[in-house]
Amino acid sequence: MADTPPTGHRLAGTGDAGAFLSRLVRLDPAALVRLRPAGPDRIELWGRVPWGVLVGRAVAARSGSPDGGLGGSGRDGGPGRDGGPGGGGGPDWDGGPDVTVGAADLLARLEAGAAELPPRRDADWRWPLPPPAARTVEELPVAELRRVAAAAQEALRDAAAHGVRGRAVGQRALRDALLDHVPIVVTPDLPGAEPVRVPQRLVQAVARMGFLGADDPGADGPRSGADGPRSGGVRPRSGGDGSWSAADQRVLVRVAGRWTGLLAPYGSAWLAAGGPLAIRPRPRTGDATN
Image (tube, rainbow, N blue to C red; front, top):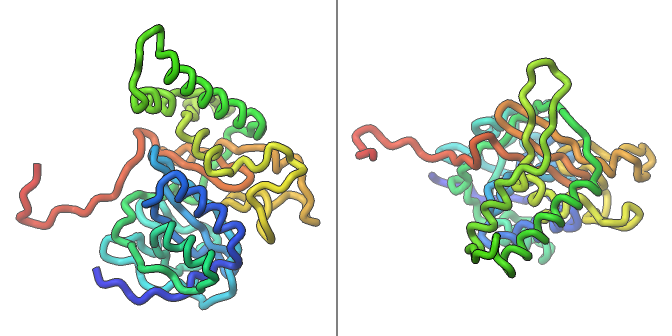
């Protein structure tokens, strides 16, 4: 595809976007980040952690052009203006294009104070996004999510050191078994509704991306400026005066079709039923297929 020249990223400051990008790059130095306009003063950042979970956070944006000022159309294999399969357009979607770049490259631009986007990598983004419309099926205390995440990490360390039932197990096998474990099962109130299973993949995503905030609710978390709790594409801080509230210490379990998500104070994590999926180009007519 022929990429259009990159333009400004419109990210307002480095604090919140930098926190998201630095965590993402720490987990995967080669990670991509997808920027989607979310109204005149917000941009959604989406990434994918190595264990197949999509993570997102909405951050403040400088005023820009009506199309979001990100440049390009997202055609020919890149994510389009409709957000790609499963992405849809939410009530705040302004119809502008989205752009995919290297997370480490964008972080470097922010740290250098540069306003330009790094080279575009739209065609490298292969994953559908969850639809914008979702329903909440449960609210969990942030402290409970921290406990579940910490217990899993402790179990992994113990198994790596002492084996399982006296037998040595490979680190990869241990990690996969840990991530596939389902520590939280929610039974919705709706008659006939299926239980909602929340695997460790989602719990570890919100924990390791820093979306749960600081252990002390009175201390500063990943926030560093205008954005506060619920800035991760979820909802704004409950207190109209910018104060902390009880809502800032809850994690929402949400479902949207085949997707299950955790919406934490500083961001969200989503996983589709059946495991991580990827969008792959359809073979051309006459191409050999296996």
